[in-house]
Image 1: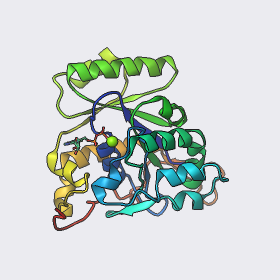
Image 2 (image 1 turned 120 degrees about the vertical axis):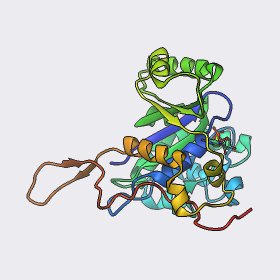
Image 3 (image 1 turned 180 degrees about the vertical axis):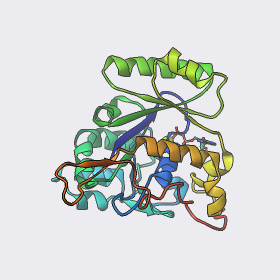
Image 4 (image 1 turned 45 degrees about the vertical axis):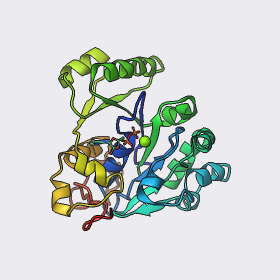
Length: 276
Ligand SMILES: Nc1ncnc2c1ncn2[C@@H]1O[C@H](COP(=O)(O)OP(=O)(O)O)[C@@H](O)[C@H]1O
Ligand SMILES: [Mg+2]
């Protein structure tokens, strides 16, 4: 897979993992050689996307976990995908915690291989694991990029700090995402927690509401949203360089995201009207 397997999780509370995963997916560069990214909701505490967007729980993670026993193929993966407005591809997790924990535990073993086989050469996958749990260890181990989402207050950062240490001890690189305001400057968070990369995501009710499946905003307003702007920058940072082979050249050429085919700035989940 030329795309990235990005794992997004948190330590405590509900800081905004699912919102971030969907925001990144809507803002992910797309184009001729850049297929829509896939969001996989693999939260052992239970999924929210199906309920928020009025989707059925099946097909979803339960079907994918069961399919993980079959030989990996793009078809196995596509059978489990539901498409939200805005061409947002998701594999929804079951709402019930017991079923979710079982499905994530099953999926964490064979799932990453299935995702890599299924997404082809340029597809990226954003796996929302909710809080990091024993069931999510296999997914974390398979990640190309690991995002630890937290709020910015001292207590939340202290919890995040413990997890950063644990991951560093295990040889995992982790990037921090601070959702909402923080009394601490980025440089201080970065040096105190020992994380090289700290991303900030603004607190923005209107956009978060759309990402919860409640209503829509016009495309122009969507693109001018600070949350969308910052998610777009983060998506470009996470997206690996596109590898192309130009005719007459033997070596692979690493492009930055190619401007003519990359569409950034995200799509609103729907362009008009309030559903609620
Ligand atoms: N950047 C944000 N701005 C405003 N509200 C947010 C933001 N991120 C999350 N929220 C809200 O916080 C609540 C929890 O977010 P969610 O993404 O479900 O958290 P998690 O997946 O970590 O449990 C939701 O009501 C969501 O709309
Ligand atoms: Mg969530």
